[in-house]
Image (cartoon, rainbow, N blue to C red; front, side):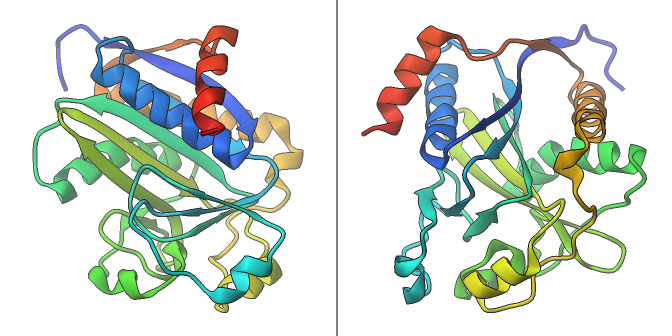
Length: 243
């Protein structure tokens, strides 16, 4: 364990917003971090209304999606499509993490492993190769960037982007997947729902976030300073979302 003083990171409390706005938030935060205007950031968020997010390089998806009354947005990170309905998302924006891509994933995901262990759920890294690029759904395959339960059910899908010295990692924790909606969109079985009606229990959701933030402080040797987005910041971010 490091004996150096914890580094201050910004923590943006849980935020529910549209897909375009959520992606604009991360785009803006990464830009500002690269310019030296923002410290490293950890945030948790939800999409309202529900959204399908596409990986930055994902160019193909099922044709019937064009007839769905569901917003599609493109993430600044890679990977495949994710249905964001009853999931909890996270983003980490930081810099100066050394190592190969798989090593960076594991450094950044360790707080999720430790945090969910504290919550009673053991998670392990997936083992699939690049066959995932032939699937529309992120949750159709578990790579070494993803976390699965003891039975191999994918629970957290994560995607990474390295930009100069800056890094953004986004992830989706599939807390309570709607199996019928997932089947209709992707044509395959939904990931196992680890919880039921979690978003109706505010105290439980707050405990998840509190436990994960505590784990992040331990894993990264940081101090998280809560700072919601200001009105001024949201004006700038909204301009990006409307481009």
